[in-house]
Length: 231
Image (cartoon, rainbow, N blue to C red; front, side):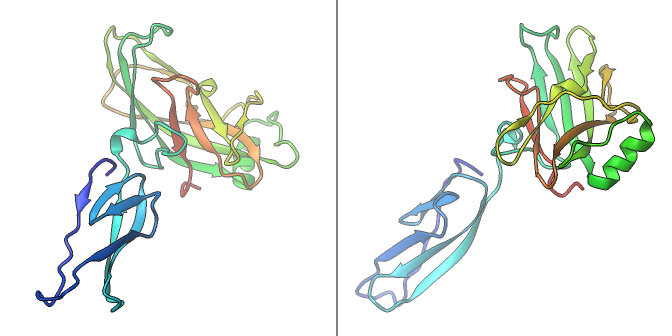
C-alpha cells in the first residue's frame, strides 16, 4: 500500500566477485521508485523492479511489485474511485446540513446503459422521453445503509445528490426527471442492519465512461464511484 516502503535484498554470487555494485530500476516511477533496493510506492498498479550488475556482464534479476489501493482512501477522489462492490463509509457532521453525526455506507451494485436502459425507461412510464440525440441513459443501482444516527434522524438519499462526470472531465449537469424507475434510490432511510437498494439515472454522451460522484463539492461527503465492469 501507499507509504509502505519495503527493501529488496539482492545476493551477488560468487561471494568473491570483485564488483558487486548494482543499478536498480523501476519500470514505472509513477507506481513505485527504487533506490538501492528500497521501494517507495506512489499509486496503485504493478511495476517491475530490476537490478543489473555494473561489471558489464549484463547479468540482471527482476521481480514484480504490486501496489494495492489504500482502502481508507477509496472513493475520496476522481483518481481513486470506489469500484463496483466496494462500500464506502461516510460520516456527515457538517454544520451546513440537518444531520448530526449520521454515518452511512454507500456502494454501486450494478448499472445498465444504452438500448437496454432505454427499454426499461420506456416501459417504466410512457411519458418518459428518449435520450437526446447522441446520448444514452445509464441506470445505476446503489446500496445504502445508515450505520448510526446520533439523534435517530433519517438520511435523505435522492437523485439530486449524484452527478455523472465524463471521462473527459466535465460534469453532466442537465436536470431531467424519469418516472417509474423502481425501486427508486430516492428515500428516507433510518438506521438498520440491512442495505436498501435502488436505482438512480443519468444521461451521458454515447460511449462515454463516466464516474459517478456523490455530494460533489462537499469536502466531507464527496465520494467517487466507477461503473467499470458493471454493465
